[in-house]
Length: 125
Ligand SMILES: [Zn+2]
Ligand SMILES: [Zn+2]
Image 1 (cartoon, rainbow, N blue to C red):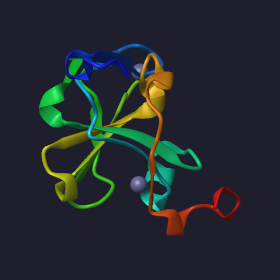
Image 2: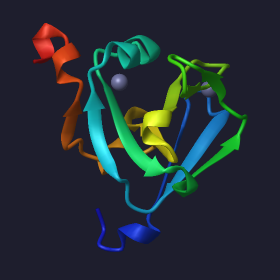
Image 3: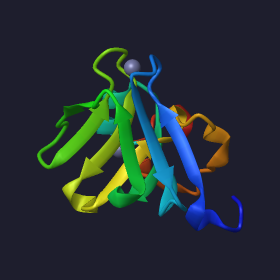
């Protein structure tokens, strides 16, 4: 990332383009999650997230739909095309974890942590 990461703006959105987001500044973390809940919600064998403070994130276009996969958890997705877009949970209050693959330039982020490794599919361990 550039040295002036605090002013960096990264954009992304869903497959059909109705829902867009913008993240300003450096993320708190970039991580892969192997938990069964993310696996089911995204349909992917593991899910990569870029974590921001919610005030760094701005949504535009069609407001994303919300699925509460667990109490206190909000997973945002496009209700038209189904793209998974973000995770927010009480355990990480005030944060929005954007799905790495939904960014226009997913190569801007490199995961440096693995979450819930014990739930990972055997062939990913
Ligand atoms: Zn869409
Ligand atoms: Zn997870």
